Amino acid sequence: MHKNTTLAIFGGNASFSQPINVGQLYFPEWQRYENAMRGIFERKYYNNNGPLLSEFEQQLAQFFGVKHAICVHNATFGLMMLVEAMGLKGKVIVPAFTFIATVQALAWAKLTPVFCDVDPLTHQLDLVKVRQLVDGEVSAVMGVNLWGGACQPEQLESLCNEYGIKLLFDSAHATGCEVNGKMLGGFGSAEVFSFHATKMLSTTEGGCITTNDDKLAGLLETMRPSYGKTQTVDVVKVINARMSEAQAAIGLLNLADFEKNRQHNEEIYHTYVKGLHGVPGIEIVQPSVVSRSNYQYMVLKLSAEQFGMTRDQLQHVLVAENVNVRRYFYPGVHRTIEFEPVFATQKNALTHTDELCRSCMQLPVGANVDILIAEKICALIASIQQQAKIITEQLHK
Ligand SMILES: *Cc1c(COP(=O)(O)O)cnc(C)c1O
Image 1 (cartoon, rainbow, N blue to C red):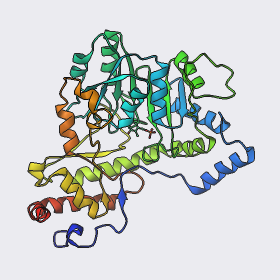
Image 2 (image 1 turned 180 degrees about the vertical axis):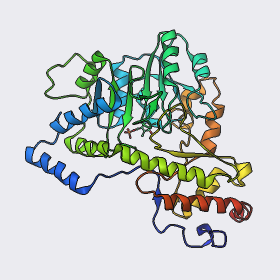
Image 3 (image 1 turned 120 degrees about the horizontal axis):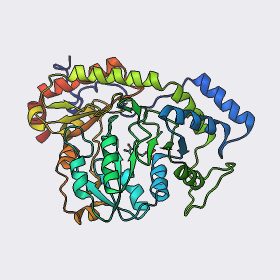
Image 4 (image 1 turned 30 degrees about the vertical axis):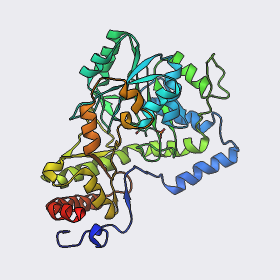
């Protein structure tokens, strides 16, 4: 279909007239939003542990199958609060193949990240390597459940129990994912979810901490803080990381739509799998370990040799076509200005992490992508692959 049309990098028209972005961006129906906002106006209550927030937290606890779901202003605040509330000390083992906020939360609490490599196929923490990194100064492991998959949370629990260290999860990618039929949210001491606009369940900006530990929940609620809750406990630090009624209103509506949105994502995912089948050099990342995924990400790994051009070259060509694919994660956290110095003091190689940072690419998914768009993107990628030689020659001129 695109074979005889000129690519946009060579002066042709872009395949799409509007940019097709990555990110979920699910919006509830306007009428329902208007009703919810009218309620906020009538009650004249914007913030501070309001009725919508309470309702949202109750529904979330049920959804995640946990005793406590504590909503916060975003997942980054949630992670910062959690490492503080858990009283972690010294070093924490964490993957470098993650969004930088995972590790920044540790830095804010003056903890030292110990970067651990990931599995080249699943992209999740490599548990054999985690074990090798445990020493007397390590107080915890922070697992990251990536790409709508999971990092073997049950096995990580056993491992941490064995060494008497703590376990927490950045589950920003994993809202609504299940492992052996059990919803993520109840593993380790606690898990943190992101409700950012680009994630599966949006409150525009937001997140929540899930836990079955009453004491930890009390600490977190006091730190947040939670006006009107009768029980407050002694905490070292307080941070304004509340979720407002307006955020909770959107969250409630999107939670009601969750399964519908998840199914849409699943359909798009399978459309990509089918459309890219047989294109040389493309390996689609499957959500690992989970018995049910939210399909929040569509990630592919590119073999430059087989495809005929590098990941960065392909990105360049696709962006010109208005397909705003992203390099994710790039650079690896251990290669950022902030964390390069600490990584330099560590001897462990992050061979697979480095390789994935060079070769992974995220394709558009979510509300703004339908089956026709996904099919068109697949055809475009296949056609680019067929012209790879000519394109790279031109790019080098
Ligand atoms: C999005 C994301 C975060 C941060 O979430 P915010 O709600 O934007 O703070 C943290 N970790 C990972 C892996 C993420 O993808």
